[in-house]
Length: 121
Image (cartoon, rainbow, N blue to C red; front, side, top):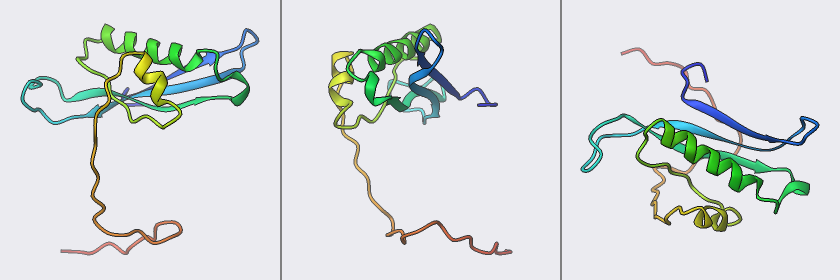
């Protein structure tokens, strides 16, 4: 947040209670064909709506605000990874479905990560 790379969006009741939220992270990106300028791109993350407030369009309104925020700052695209539940919301807003593949380099053990002693070279 101090680096201004994470921006939160919150929907509140008239009484001021937070009932839905999400964030835009300005994700570092590598230059590539067609996108040679700029080193960051808005990424939607951490979307949540309290169960009793779901189905009222709050998530859609938050994402619309994130899109406007990104346009105002002249970014060329905004990305996210949608859950099964959120996928229809993003499609209705005009997000195009894309594919990401992942390769796990090693299995991770269960439990919290263990600290390794630092090595000197």
